[in-house]
Every structure is written in structure tokens, then in C-alpha cells.
Amino acid sequence: MDFKDQIKILGERVVKLKDQIATEEATKNAFIMPFLQSLGYDVFNPVEVIPEYVTDIGTKKGEKIDYAIFKDGSPIILVECKHCSQNLDLHEGQLLRYFHVSKAKFGILTNGIIYKFYSDLVEANKMDEKPFLEFNITEIKDIQIEELKKFHKSYFDAESITNTASELKYSNELKQLISQELNSPTHDFVKHLAKQVYPSIITAKVLDLFTQLTKKAAQALLSDLITERLNNALKKEKEDEQQEIQEAAALTEKANSKIETTEEELEGFLIIKSILRQKIDVSRVAYRDAQTYFAILLDDNNRKTICRLYFNGNKKYLMYFNDNKKEVKKEIQSLDDLFTHSNELLEVLNRYEEYDN
Image (cartoon, rainbow, N blue to C red):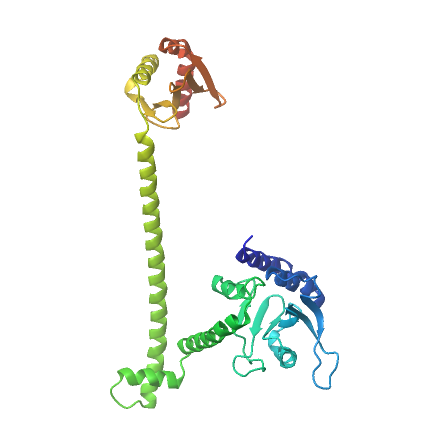
């Protein structure tokens, strides 16, 4: 099972069990330990994952963080856990204190549902106020899984993560700012835009007007972007479907090129027609040749198979379906033997005719 599937399954597990979790300890056992395991760390190895890791803070001795993940004898990630119903915003200060006195470059604050990843990108050895990565494991996006994968034991590289974490942190903050401005544009933002298009002085009245125009323009832009993305997706889906049709047609053509209708099969077809003409107009009897058999059909319909002739092997067979729609295969020595099965073939025909009526 690949990493993405493991995380998705864990997210589904959290959805099912979160209402049954009564304590912080249960949260750790049910959600957080499996999460650490999915990152490749052995939670039962006290050298690799140390529970209740002691981090003395100044005069306070015996202060403990829930988990410390070690590599080569040094802590690399601190994990502070809370009950799954807890608001993590109330506990960021606690992780900050532990982080300050530790050699670990990364800290995780989690309630088993929300995961916040911190580092010291702004000031060395001081945990940033805002996380550089945050996600809800029940709604995690593929792009977030790719970022999370960097913390897997197999890929962990502190320097590499730090380099990309800075970009990720500021990109996320910019996205939040842009989202806020689009939903509720500030006067500074509106004024900046208005100056680009309005040729005169920006009065309070003009600013109010452009605030409304900015909101409408933002909504229209988002709508256009969504429509464009949907159209592109539909176009690609149509192109993929067309490609599949072309590939299927090519395969069919290739298969058909291997089919050779023999004189013997055509003679057999004429015999079957002569049998069926007792009951129906023979113009309703058709055939379709395949690589392994020669099918004789009523009304050129695959669901109305009268019989199949197997003439390509060392032995010849006639096959038809009985009352229970099971195959009945009869060996024949010559084409004349087909006449001996006239009654069975007429019964097959009658079943189709009765069904249609």
C-alpha cells in the first residue's frame, strides 16, 4: 500500500471513530500513533520514538512532551498531542516552550484530526508563530500529502524540508490574504486597484463604488476560472474518450484482420438458413465471424444467437443454448450432421420469437 493510500485510510478511520474517543490517551492510541507509523517510524522502538520525552524548561524540571522522534541519536521532530475535540489554537504556546529548549528543527501540534507543522524559519531556535503546513487529515489534499511525505522516515532531510518550508509558509499566508481581499476587500486594496483604472482623485464616494465593483469583479473572475477549469476538464475527458474509441477500433481492426471466413463456414451457414426457413424469412438470419467461432444470429443481434460453428480446430462442433441458457456443444463429423440437430435449432428460434411476442 503506498503512502497516499495509508493517509487516506487513516483519515477515514478518524471520521468513523472520533465520536468514540473520550480521552487524550485514546486519541494518541487510535489516531496519532498510527499517523506516526504511516510516516515510517516505529512507535514501539524507544530509541526512535520516545513517549513522554523530558524537556526541562528553565527552572521547571521534568516537563514532558508527548513524543520525540529521534534520528542518529538526536531529536528531529517534537509532537504535542491533545484530545481530538480540543482547539489547538489554545495550546501553541506549550509546543513553543518545548521547541525553544530542544535541538529538534520541527514541531507538530495535533489533536489527531488537525495537524500543524512548525519550524524556526523566521528566527533561529525560536518556533514560528504560524505553522508552515496545516491540514485536516479527514479532508487532506493530494498536494498536502506530497508535502507530508517529506517527513517520512525514508525521505526525511531537515535541510531540504527547511528550504521548501519557507516557501510553503509564505505561499499559504499569501493565499489567505488574497482570499480575504477577494471576499472582503480592504480600503488599501481597493484604492490600489482603483488607481490603476480611475483617472481622477479617489474620493470616499469613489472608494465605496470601487469596493462594490471589486467584489463583483472578484466573484466574476472566480466564476470564470471555475468555468474554464470545468470546460478544460470536460474537453480532456472527451479527448480521452475519443482516444479510447480510436484505440478500441484499432484493436478491433487488428483482430478482424486475423479472421478468415472459410468456405466450410459459409456452407454451414446456408444449411442453418435452410433449417430455419421453415419458420421465418431467411433474410433475418445473419452471421458474424470471430477468431475462434462462426456465429449465426437472428436479426443480426448478438443476444439472439441461434448457434455457433467451431470449425477451426481438428474437430468440428455445433454449439447452441438450451432452455437454461447453458451452452450445449455437439461434435459433428460432416456438414450434413447439422441437419440432425434441426429440432434443437428450431427450439432456440422459437424461444426468441416467443420472448419478442
